[in-house]
Structures are given as C-alpha cells and as structure tokens.
Image (cartoon, rainbow, N blue to C red; front, top):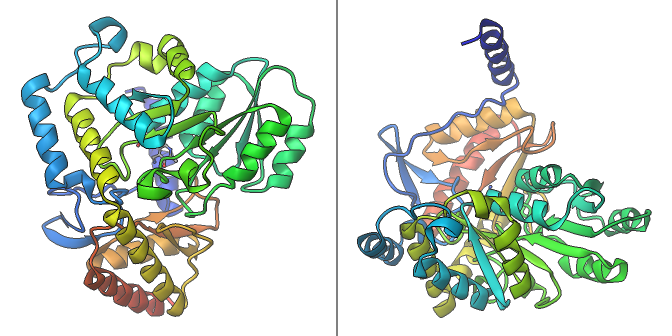
Length: 392
Ligand code: PMP
C-alpha cells in the first residue's frame, strides 16, 4: 500500500471516530427478525428496513428455495447476452400489475435503478430539479447523467417553482424521494405532478420506503395520492418492505423498452438472482392478498411515536412508521445508541453526512413483526437512557 495514502486513510478514520461519525457495523448471527442475535446477545431489532417481516417469512424463504432448485443460484450474465429467465419476466409483470402501470424492469438494487434511470433519461443540456434531501443514489445518478442539477429546498413547492421558472433548455426532470428515509416525511407528489405538468417536465419518484407502506395494500406513494398515470417514472427497491434485494423501475411500456436499450446497469451488469426474484414475486403476492401486515406496521408506528412524544422526545415530522428520535450532536447520538444496545435495543445513530450536521438522531425502524411487548420494552429503555443523558 502506498505510504502517503495509508496515512491519509488512517487520519480520515481517526477524524470520523473523533466526530462520533465512525460506522460500527454489527454482525448478526442469524436472520432479520423482531429480535436478532449480535455477539451472542438477543437484542430488539430497530435497525432494519424489513418493514413487513418478509425478509424471513416462511413463504418467501420457501419460494427462494424452490427457485434455486429449478433455476440455480446465478443468472449467467447480463440479460442482453445470457437471455432472460421466465422468472424475471414474471416478476416484472407482477410488479407492473401491482403498481398499476404498463410495465416494469428490474435492476440489481434500488441504488442501481436510480443510477441507471436518471442517466438514461437526462444528459448534458438537460436540467434536473432535485429535493435537497434526496437519497445518495439519486444524487449520484444526477451527477452521472451530466445534466445540470438545480436543488430545491426540502419539500418546499415555492422553492421548486422558483427553480422551474428559471430559463430551461433541453428536457427537465423533477426527482424526489417518496418517503424521506431519515425523517419519515412524505413528498408532496400531488403538487409536484401539477408543477411538472405546468412546466412540461418529467416526474420521477423513488418509492423505496413507500412500497409496502403507503397506499392501498402497500402499493406505494402513487397510489397514496391516487396519481396513477400522472407520474412518469417510479423507482422501487426490493430491499425494504419486500424483504429481498433488487430494484425496479415502473412506468410506460415505451419507457421500459427504452431503458432495456439504454440503461447501462441493465446492459452491463448481471440480473438479480433467481432466489431474490422468486422471493420478491412471493412478497408481492402476499401484499396483494392481504393488507394486515401493512395495517399492523402503521398501528405499531403510531403507538411508538405517540408514546415517545408523551415521554418528552422529539420525533420530528414523520408521517410514516419511520421514527427519528432527534438528539442533535453526533457524539451524544452515538452514546445513546451504545447505551440502548447495552440495554438490549439495536437502534443505530445516524449522523453527518447521512443527515445534516447537528441533526444526529436515533432512527427507529418499526416493523410489523414487533409485538406490543417489544415496543413497550423499547419505550422503557428509551426513557431510562433519555433521563440518564438528560435529554428528556
Ligand atoms: N433509495 C432510497 C430512498 C433508499 O433509502 C435506498 C436504500 N437505503 C435506496 C434507494 C437503495 O436501495 P437498495 O438498497 O436496493 O440499493
């Protein structure tokens, strides 16, 4: 290793530790569930995006196992070269039907889907209007595209209108997270769609945290606002409520046909594994049949948030089961998270650059698999540590 670079990295790591921003990655000794085993200790899991418990649901596990027996473990190569499996086509049909759009296309992850789609839809000479709190994969997709990026204030439609009013050449694209994963607030997609129509620009929403959470039977943010047919591009990821790994885009048939020819992660990276595809098909089928998991998720989210507020915590402006517990300084948030772990609750602290400096928090991810007893257990621990650290 080059000596100067070695020193540079060591200094950077030391700085991160000093600022309380060093990511300590926990090792799980089993599957994702309400409780997980870490370093031999059972802790309540408040850190996963497994909103509905589908990551280790018996039916999704069974579907993955069956798919491996029939299709093997790998896709062979990129789809344009090795061909596409019937399984991938089936998932794309199911997703399109579930989201009430003409067509869908899968990618290897949600991150890849954002990179792929943004860079295929706009380029040099075009303009992207991007919410300031958009996910890193959107930001990177914007950079990759080469289009000019105009950032509007978070959720602020006046600010969006202001940038839309500025002179434009080429194509325009408004892009937003659907549910902002660090705060749990919902994009004003209805107003965004109206502005998009007025200014003749495209709309794209990343529904990573809306799928399986918002809309009827968890159909997502477009269904939540009843905007079917009015949003040009929906991005999805399977790694949250659907419980697996992969990403997708949903929209018109022509959009999907175009992306199959133009989107580089589709053309140059292999497809999602058969096991993931089959388990995702099962997740969509479970959602379509029964919304009890979605209902339970919301009831648990409301219960937890209400009781945290009663205890004196600031849970921000969340409109979804995502519960940010605002702490402020990254060091204090890290101490809070460490104390929670000692007390049996696995809830990560989140600091800069994922959230702005001075806005560090513990992000609690509620899941339908948590029981009322689990939530009460956690509430007791939050209160205990909140007093201890003089935060409430
Ligand atoms: N978009 C958003 C809003 C996300 O929160 C995430 C995951 N953190 C992604 C995209 C990326 O999804 P994936 O894990 O499937 O790459």
